[in-house]
Length: 114
Ligand SMILES: [Zn+2]
Image (cartoon, rainbow, N blue to C red; front, side, top):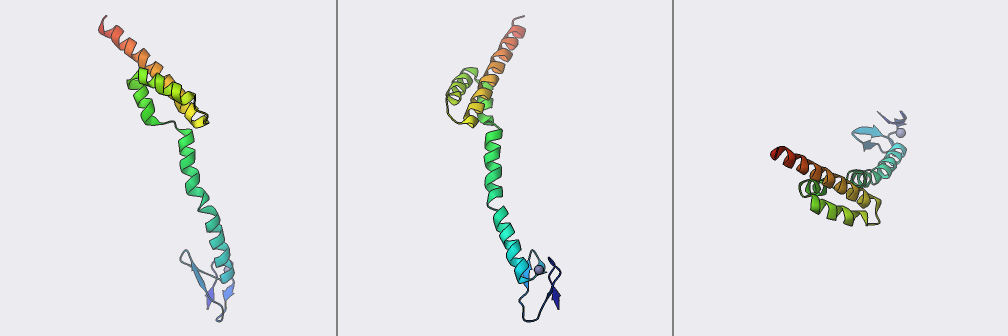
């Protein structure tokens, strides 16, 4: 005789036992658990990548901004004029890193010619 590992109910001989995540469960629990999984799976993968995109500005663009400040200012200006909040953030980061790039370039030149 088998027992449902979810609700603890004894699964009768005439009843069909289901396997859920390698556990024996009754029909009701199987249905309920599958519904839960279905409800949680589609939201999770689509949620994390979109979060990543909005939270972290484009790293490649920031590196370019730092190495080539002029390009960074242009990229920053373009992105800042975009309507999307994420793009604006990327633009701001590009402008900031472009300024850091210019400042470090000036410092480097000052050190070189001293
Ligand atoms: Zn059950």
